Image (cartoon, helix red, strand yellow):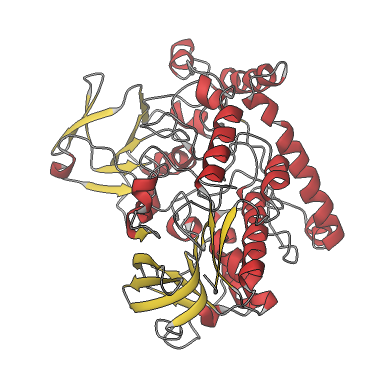
Length: 501
């Protein structure tokens, strides 16, 4: 049953005009931050959410087959009571309900401003506060927490003639249940995580499904299953849930050795992927087309038991090149082959390396955040940015993982931000700004850690900034090492402005 967030009257007008903390975004990071603030009851805060519901990625992505590729008991807050997950890997609907329930249970639904988009945020040095313009008016705050995530801005490739397409074009993050799938000729653009989930469902409905595959992915078995009634009851015991989470975390972190291209670890995961391919694709020619020519792990390793079987259906065509041009109903691939289509489904990812919200943030010296990040995102502790006092970025620069749970990383950052807010609670302190030297040193540390990983030696991927070639999205280490490095706030690398000047 979905939690009801509609009972609080007119959530667009409940926020004060001035608060201690403004949180932008109501996905996992924003809801986690709000939970921490609500529980300690010290700071006043509001959560700005441009959509009309909470959930972030799991609100926006509702396409058939949407699910997580991290086990449910690791993809949930450690500080919440264990959730009653129905299967090893949670569905998108279950995750969204979990987040909605968190808002209700933690009692901050009256702090939400839904349908309220951040338009501009500017640091006011004289007042030592952020002035924030929203679609619902102005608000000021002492601390700004950006929790907009990496998967919030759908990316549509620049395809010649796409606007002339006579059918419908839909991104997987803007799915509509009324799309005419039955008997349609459908083009699926991309073979990433969303594509491998949605492809089997499209194939069941379509007269013909054309999968445009620019780069074949590595795929390993998903091995999902429903939990038994007895297992679900056992996992509701907090001690059992903690043990399960810790074991899952350790198991996932062990896979980081693959990203360092260490033997035999990388050989074992490569062999697992190739065995999966050979066991499900009997045609040698198709198997060759589906064999990646880059090192495993440098792009996201996908989990699926039904993607390969989908590709051998009679009504499915694997087009081993990118969609190049569109002329009305005809979609032409880079190979030169053309297909008549009624619907184009874009499983083409997100604007992750250059978050659009950065164009709306202006710091202490008039510099915009996107200018500061013109050579790729940088930070200190993957959370603060020089020139932007009292601002904290969650799930931003080098705060994601390619092998483990994003929620563990977010919780680490939450601890860091709460530690910084503890310092700011001193009446004599106006602001905290990380020094340029500290940010530069941390960036150099990231670059050094990343240099030997498969992300910088194996291929080009969306984890890497397209202009600078730096690894800007992922932490180049284990989840545990991220917490050891960034889990506790230390004021030493910060300039502390006091009220005396």
